[in-house]
Image (cartoon, rainbow, N blue to C red; front, side, top):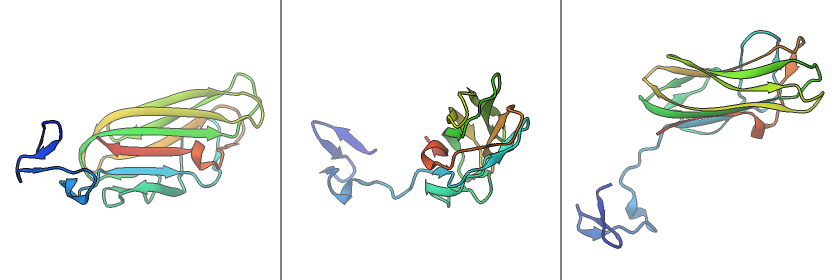
Length: 168
């Protein structure tokens, strides 16, 4: 950071104390590339096939770094990223059925936690978190699959349905 620690922050370059309570502590106006998206409506998911998860709103994000105009985010700055997600289905009562999420990147895919029936209208979730190195133009998207036998809906609750991509 250009500072040394001697009981207080000291800027070696300007030979002054660094005061983090004022605007003078900031060394760069650069924003860390990040994107947090969430669902704002239910989505019907067919049975037995991976389906792209469509997010309805951007909670926070630097769209100059990450573009989310489709269900696919495109990386604008190479680096190591942490990607976390959660998807919640409305729930169903069919015994012995399950589902899971899958994060797809240009180089690899990662499965989220499996969810199993808990009873009709009892929400069930799949979550995941990965650290992955991505290059410029690499893509990221979230998919979901279930084997209940009938179309099932995600919940519309934005708290229960999100994906966050942040560069370390």
